[in-house]
Length: 422
Image 1 (tube, rainbow, N blue to C red):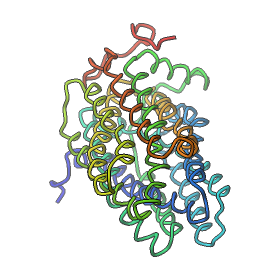
Image 2 (cartoon, helix red, strand yellow):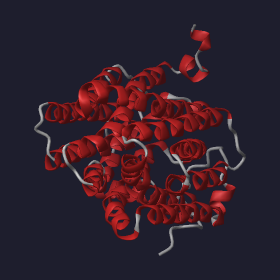
Image 3 (spheres, rainbow, N blue to C red):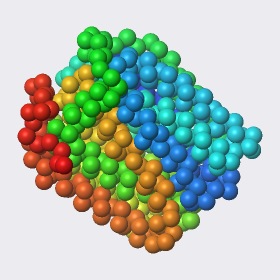
């Protein structure tokens, strides 16, 4: 049986433990992703309230992600992730109790989602920085692809489970399952024993601000990093609100509510699984240039939701965008882990999350009012037009076109000829 496992799971036992916990946690998150918007609508919330609650979970990214990156380069990354899982377990449990007892109100959900987002802000940079301490360099792309397979497969399984759970126990029951998944993930993280990182071996010298500046110097001195972050920022701020806010609203109006939206998200998940499996084998000579094209495909999500004639056509085309999303993020994360020095990786990742996911609340809050004023479908069309253009502009950056999959020599930020423009 063991021989049937992918080599990275057989040969990297520490990663296998992380992978098991990650699988359970992501499945719970995918259930919650479907349940939460309909929980807001079920307690009488408006389209703007759906966006507000979704944004509340991401606002702390603006406040705490950079601190999370510094901490993850100073302290054991798996311990930070463990604490984050425990906090998120408590928060989701509280949300479930409020919904199940009939005491949920939009302000309560906003406050709890802000706590959830704070824990998320510390988890994400630590997770990116932890992987090179668990997996050999030649297995990083495979490890990222397998984690992506779980995230994508959960988009298929999660909505189906969410639909059943919401039907049987309401949105509160679905969110209770997410709370349990965080507890199980924490149990696996508690058993990890990664090798010491460079910061731990050398000592984490310098003030908080000095370490923050060092992380930024690693970003601004590499044009492929800051331009890639900019393109992802557009994707998260402009395109993804079509998934988190406007898509569920359109589903509620025209596609039989949660059932129709579950079909779309499940189809996207199928495509994303295909993309991750492809990325497991994929070895493009210029990974980030390939990824830029994949991100352009992914950015078509909004126009598909607004323009396809029925839910089945939407689902089929969203599956294609799922391939693009998965391929891009596997190639992007692996490029960071290969080319950024390990001692600064979590700080660079924190800027990555800040400039992409951390700015997404802006789009989530604005999407509803803009759609109310300009119309739901015209807003979706413009979202994709902007996202595709930003993705293809990446190909104009020489460092993006020329980046290989091999580690670069130790980088001196002051010596790079392509700094962030003033």
